[in-house]
Amino acid sequence: MASLTIISPCNSSSSSSSSLFAGSSLSHKTVGYNQSRSRTCASNSFKCNLPQPVNIGNGKPTVPILNERTLPKFLESAQMETSVNRNGAKLKVFSGTANPALSQEIAWYMGLELGKINIKRFADGEIYVQLQESVRGCDVYLVQSTCPPANENLMELLIMVDACRRASAKNITVVIPYFGYARADRKTQGRESIAAKLVANLITEAGANRVLACDLHSGQSMGYFDIPVDHVHCQSVILDYLASKTISSDDMVVVSPDVGGVARARSFAKKLSDAPLAIVDKRRHGHNVAEVMNLIGDVKGKVAVMVDDMIDTAGTIAKGAALLHQEGAREVYACCSHAVFSPPAIDRLSSGLFQEVIITNTLPVAEKNYFPQLTVLSVANLLGETIWRVHDDCSVSSIFQ
Image (cartoon, rainbow, N blue to C red):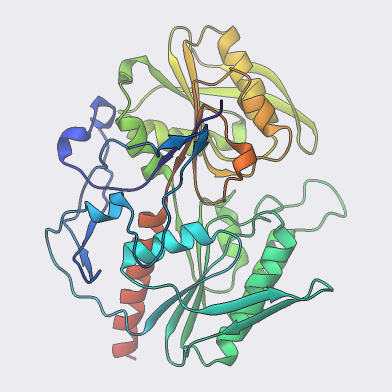
């Protein structure tokens, strides 16, 4: 009987922090809602409450329904401390069809309603987009991941941008929780394309003024855009969750599943009381095919936390986990921002190699991909707060123009 844990952002007292964060300098904000759902900001730092799993009924997870009358518990329970007035009259958030649940969570966090938009597909597959409310002179934020089907979702995003531009929006910011073509960021062989640059050009030429993206595969992808890029990391969400676990920092080792992810793993380890680092050395013989060679570092008797930006077919991380067990690791956790989960990823992840697989909801997780060890964390508060700050900065800049 499969089960799933879905963790949503919430606030708590500082007592929820564990020893993992003895040397951490994480800084966040928390928000609260009154009965009219007006938005307020709290003090400069917080830690999340111990996460609460969703109810499981008949073996299936029950995801909270987000509508006009139902507010998720993690948003209702937020405590208001310092009130900051923010005018949302000129800010509108619209959702594409790629991940509407995340878009709705972002809107709830911000105390806004999602903008009304009509998106449909004709019989021949063409995409039709019509904004059903005025955006003239507004700062518009379009939330759309380029997740599978990547090409359809990308084209939908481009048409949404064009519709906003033709409707006289003042600024158009595309919020891309998962940037699907980020892996094609360089030429590894002759006569290859650099699709990440091509997609960046398409988004820019469509009329976008700014990009907000989560955990790009490589930082160099930001340079492919000729417009400002805000690059946010989901590390803080995963770190707060790990802080709620009863794992001693002395027993933990952070593992990079490949050499290319060493910088990401090192940054992650520093926030876990400067935990030791191990590296899995691998050789890739083709796309989505990896072979583990050896392990650099000591994991014997320790809890290994494997950190990567995405899990696609899970070949790299599964073979790495098998090697860690061979080297004497007591438990293995897998953490990633983007759960692409292309077959046979679920079979590999649910095979017993992992104590827990911790992901975020930058991509929607299909019900068929649920398995007992899976934990989904929400990045709605991270993206919602970033949108507010970008909007505030743009509003201030326009005053002095």
